[in-house]
Length: 172
Image 1: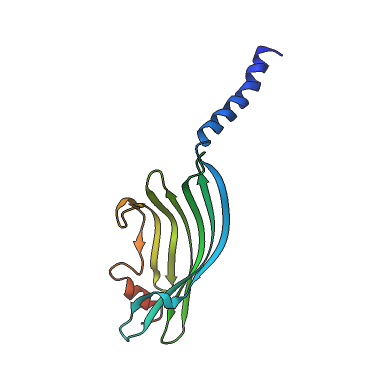
Image 2: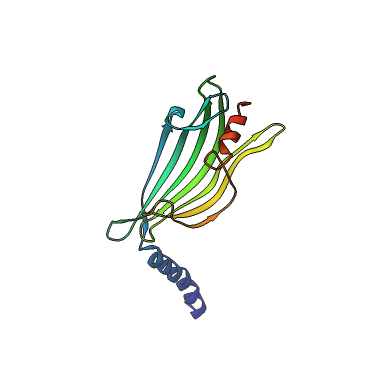
């Protein structure tokens, strides 16, 4: 075999070995797919001017990927989540549904919780965007509310004016 051919054959082997060495510290150990539901009655997110209560529920499907180190300890968990969110007017039973996606990563080595996606984009004819939350944030795993980074628009039911936006979905 010529020296050039020997070098060409060695490159993929070296690249594969280097990749395995770098990735060897954490490898995919398990992937689980499941479905979860939270009824709208679990969370009242708005009380409208007429007294109507609006609940928020979710139906979701997620793929959970767990990564372990060589010792078998979980170092990272990533969840790919697709969901339908449901706002429900408890006074009338009327519902408004929206779709969302989210990738959540818990890095147990760095101590971070990272979430990114299009959480909700809710529009109404003649009004345009009513609720819109997308982007990413990195939060401390141990201290809830300690954010390291945030980016993207946030107009949802939890911010000032959010309750009014939710009530507007029902003409209230």
